[in-house]
Every structure is written in structure tokens, then in C-alpha cells.
Image 1 (cartoon, rainbow, N blue to C red):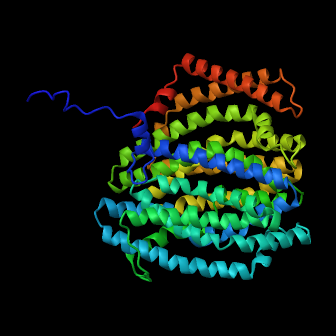
Image 2 (image 1 turned 120 degrees about the vertical axis):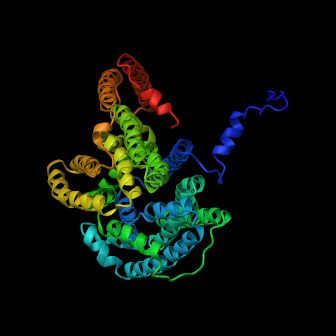
Image 3 (image 1 turned 180 degrees about the horizontal axis):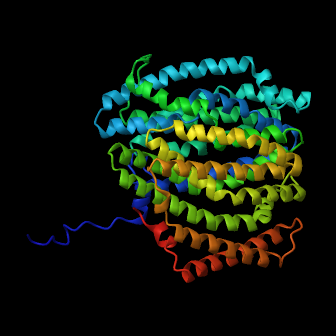
Length: 533
């Protein structure tokens, strides 16, 4: 066969064309391209989230008002979690992916319609009930609020409750897109949601105060979480009809998978509620803890959330095709890369806590003393990064295997058992004790989930790259200590110039120490992180 002429050769694809393809809404992604896309969009979402938190800090500071605002999200989140498990997309992805793999799109469409119709009605009734009994529900959580603060919390909660309908329906619709390996629209939803909060504050805060943020959140949920995904799903040909088919087998399977998530209490979700409950007795503590944890959630989102969201459809496909060996290898490979990267990043976060928090949040009503308090919380949060990042992958390995009962029983037991620990450490060390209790709880949650996967021979722990993980741990400790010693050369006392100098010294030292450490230990982690498979 003759060789192709020059005119017949395929021209190389430019960088910008490849980038455009990566961010095209209808692209069907591989696991690698999905992770790259999600890392990019989640990072952008966190930047917008930073702008939101910076705006709130600038305008409202860390006061009883901001505590009431953050507390106002608790009951709406709880209603969503109770009725839909907060995981509508997670459980639906496995079912819908199986239908697509088996070319049963008509059944997938019928199941989609039943899940949307029936559960929207159930959630709507729950929202109405919560609106009526909202004062009593909030009294259970925030009895330490003074009367004015409590009244504001009730008012904000009633504004936020209807948004849960948009979160639920948008979650199911986004599951359809994820099952088709179309990740862009579900990924940009949180960006629009955070943007709605900012715009609500900018346009209406002078008229209605902090309530403007709540109205902005509802608008952002409608546009970003529901409308964008609905339009994208409609373009793929997914049809919807009102359906109350309670006997649909796949709907019953979805209920069976979701009930453990609805009835169980995961510490991943409950941690925020527990922190707010104990911190509600001290003015500003809820807000300061929230600022520290929101910053901490950036690396969690980039390292853990992106990998977990990108991996679930592929885990589900491997398990559905009975490729159990490949399933276990895929989960262990993902865990190893996430754990190794998280160990390195956590050391950088710990040593740079104060200058980062001071640069990000100190403005308007927030002072350097607030930055110092926030930095202590952030330091302790950063220690648990590896467990927050890994637990998402371990949980999704169970979900992909069609088992939601086991991890949620384990997580519920851990959550309940952790409550005395939160209480004891809070009374001994105040808000810092809450963060330490959070670290211990999430570490237990992650390790026990990994143990259960190993016991069921789904993901053998012995096959993890323990030697490489050990190298990453050693390098992270040495790099963190060296960076901390170098950072002592500059005195931090509220100067932004000093913040930037310290960050520069820390970053240069940490990068050099990590690069040298990985080289001297002959670590395979850098090459494995670049690997596309």
C-alpha cells in the first residue's frame, strides 16, 4: 500500500483547538481529560467562591449577622440531604451508565422521568413542611443565638429552602450528562451559583442587607445548577415526561441505593453542621471557621472532588462490565496519585496558613487578629487533606459497585461516635478543638471505608503503592519543616508586603525541597501524575 502524500497527511491539531475541544459542552471525555476539565473548572469555581467570601468579609465582617447567614444554610442542606440523600447524581450515574452500556436508552429515559417527577413532589412537600416548622427546626441547632440573630437566621432559611428543588432536579439532570461523559455543564454550575450570590449582594445589599446574598443564592441555583444542565441534557435528546411510575424497576433500584444515603449521616456533610452547632455560642466563630474551611476546600476540590467526579462513570462502567481486576487497579491507582499529591500539598498549606489567610480575607471589617485565628484553624484543617481527598474516591468505589448501604452505615456510626469527641475538644480547646475533632473523624471515616473495600476484596489495600506514598510523606515533612524555618526570617504583623515576602520564601523553599526530595528518593509520583491512563 503506498504511503500517503503530504496533502493526505493529517495536519497537527493546534493547542487552542485542543483546548476548545476540551471545553466543548458535547465532548465525551476520557478519565484523564475529564479530570483536567474538572480541575480547571473547580479551580475557577473556587476563585469565584473566594471573591464571594472576600465580598462578604469586606461588607459584613465576622459578626453575629454573618453567623446567622451561614447558619441559615443548615436546614435547607439538611432537607436536601434527608429527602434526596444529597447524592441524587451519584446514585443515578451508576444506573444510567449501565442502561447506556446495554443500549437501553428508552428504559433510561423512563427511569429519568420517574425519578424527577416523584422525588420532586416529595422534596416539594418537605420544603413546605420545613417552611412551616422552620423556627422549631432551627431552635434545635441554634438555641444559643440571641433573639434578633435567631429571627434573622429563620428569615434567611425560609428564603433559601426553595433552592433545594433546583439542586435536586439539577443534580439528576447533571447525572445524565455525566453518564454520557459530558462534564463541562455540570462543572460550571457552581461557578454560576457563586456568581449569583455575589451579584445579589452587589445589587441589593444596601436595600435589604445580608438577605440579598440569600436571594442571590436561589437565583444562582436556578440558573447554574438547574437551567444550564437542563438545556444541555435536552440537546442530547434526553426526553422528559411527567411520570408517577412507582413500579419502574430502575426507579425502585435507585430508591434502594439512595435510602441508605438518605437515612445515614456522613461526616463529610455533617461536619459543617456540627461545627456550626458548637460554635454558635461565640460571636463570629461560625464565620471564622467557615472562612478557613472554604479556603481548605480548594485543594480538596482540585485533588479529591475533581478526581472523584471524573472517576465515578468509569468505575461504574468497569464494575458493570465485570472487569473486577481492572476496577480494583483503577481505584488503587487513583488513590495512590491523590494521596501522594495531597501529602505534598498539605505541608505547603500548613506553613503558609497565616500569610495566605491574611492576604485573602483581611479587608473591610476583618482585622489581622481575625487572620491569626483563621490561620490556626486552616493549619489544623490542612493536616487532614489526604483523608478528605481519598475518602471521596473510596466512597465512589462502593457506589460504582452498587453498594451504598455499607459505607453509609459505617459513616453514620463514625459520625455519631465523633459527637462526644467534638464536644470534649470544644470545651477543652474551643473552636480549635472542633477542627482537631473534624480531622480525627474524617481520618477514621476514610480509613474504615478503605478497610471495608479491602475486606470485600473489591479494592485490596496491599496493592497500593505504599513505598511511593512513604516517599511522598517523607518529602512533605522535610519540605514543610524547611519552609517553616525560612518563613521565620520575616516578621508578620499585618503588612501585606510582609505577607507576600513570606509566601515567596515559603513557595521557593518548598518547591526546591520537594523537587530535590522526589529526585533523591527516585520517586515515580511525578511521572505517574502525568500519566493519562
